[in-house]
Amino acid sequence: MADTKYIFVTGGVVSSLGKGIIASSLGKLLQARGYKVTIQKFDPYINVDPGTLNPYEHGECYVTVDGHEADLDLGHYERFLNIQTTKDNNITTGRIYQNVIQKERRGDYLGKTVQVIPHITDEIKRNVKSLGVKNRFDFVITEIGGTVGDIESTPFLEAVRQLRWELGKNCFCLHLTYVPYIAAAGEVKTKPTQHSVKELQSLGIQPDMLVLRTDRKLNTDILDKVALFCNVEQGAVMQSIDVSTIYEVPVMMQKQGMDEVVLRKMNMPLGGIPDLERWNAFLQKRKDAKKEVRIKLVGKYAELPDAYKSIHESLSQAAIYNERKLVLDVCHSEKITEENVAETLGNADGIVIAPGFGQRGIEGKFISLTYAREHDIPTFGICLGMQCMVIEYARSILHLKDANSTEMDPQTVYKVIDLMEEQKHITNMGASMRLGAYDCVLKKGSLAYKAYGKTKVQERHRHRYEFNNFYKVQFEVAGMKCTGINPDSDLVEVVEVPHLRWYLGTQFHPEYNSTVISPNPLFMSFMNAAASTRELRKKEA
Ligand code: GLN
Image 1 (cartoon, rainbow, N blue to C red):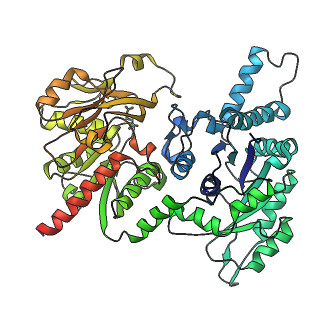
Image 2 (image 1 turned 90 degrees about the horizontal axis):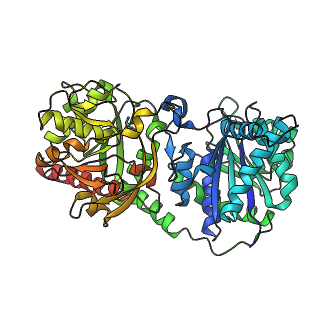
Image 3 (image 1 turned 90 degrees about the vertical axis):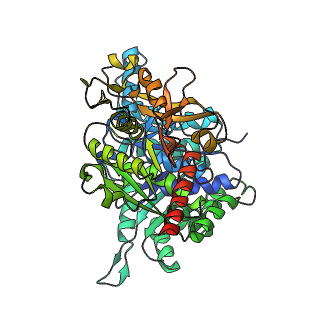
């Protein structure tokens, strides 16, 4: 087997240019030519992982199958490549330092002064290479978070510089920059790109390819000019024009020959004819989907588009496969009251109650659930959303007044959601939840079973609290069925109310397991119910 090839993706000029999407698109194109590819993200902050960051700081926290709380870009990698990532795919400065300090305490460097170069850079390089070697990937694409010139990312870039020497042709650097349009001059400007490449060169890294993010088409003269000024081969300067969906980006890059340039420069055969059939079929379906489906997502981070990234993507994939165009409103749970709930949710074809932590906005979720249940609107509760479904049902149908989760009210008499015994003694906040993929056995005939078409499934978790089995019989008698159970711990993972159209909650997060090629079955089933509800309504009107 040939050596693993390493591709580094850096960004310059400004942040938020979409390095993750470019990395994913290149990964997709290489994969489509038959190569085995994975993508890794380096985050230059000192937190050991993003698990303890709130969404205001860092958007959604993504969870891998092996229980790592990860950067949301890993979600893009999985959705684009239809692969599973692990803890090894997301490394922070904090983790690198933690590893080095542990080694120092163990005596691994006995007698030596431990320094950024070589000890930190060696640890970074070890993490890049071990991912490729361990899993025998053809390509490991590593995205370096932040922007070139940031103090924080310097050790990572120094490691890239060293790897270029060590790996030779097996290493490739792609740099993403921004080309602004200056309205007063009526021109696009390449100077920021030139400066950014200079900055990278001053760190000893010569990019092999440039991708220019732009809001309008750049002509060949501009691309050639950038190539000349930045020491990059003509033809290795691509443009990434704003498009209506991130899923168009691989196709846009393919048209410019991105994968061919990379393979040629790395001395790799072009491989088979790129297989993007299913990908393109999805894009075509997206274009063809004209009929709308209106989903309301009730959560407390309504103003933050990245806070529910994976839910949004899963809904949009499921809508497209159901031949619908998703119209998603995120409704601020703190603002929902008895008085305005009808106005807020009345025209919803489906409602999602979001995951979350803490008390803020929780009453709005209960009010939404009562409304959804009484008006029989398809409703999907995810993690905290499922726990809220249970609490609302306990209060309204089981008449357990003030039933609650002990997360919200530790003194409640009716602890319908409670901490597991193992969780009660945990004091550390980092990586101490129930995390990662667990088995779940679905009851035959249930909504969940029908959606998945099988009894044994695996989905990812991120929570501390659980359905309290003490109340299980009471709920079942009152019409809320526990239809998904963990076979090892007997914990309830899915609840549903069969006499309603589609009313289901999952303790797990199915949104982490939905890709462009393989949308999650529960989202598909929910969307199908929402689309039918819309049709029914239209007929009735
Ligand atoms: N706060 C809840 C728990 O810890 C739910 C977490 C979530 O929604 N991810 O159990």
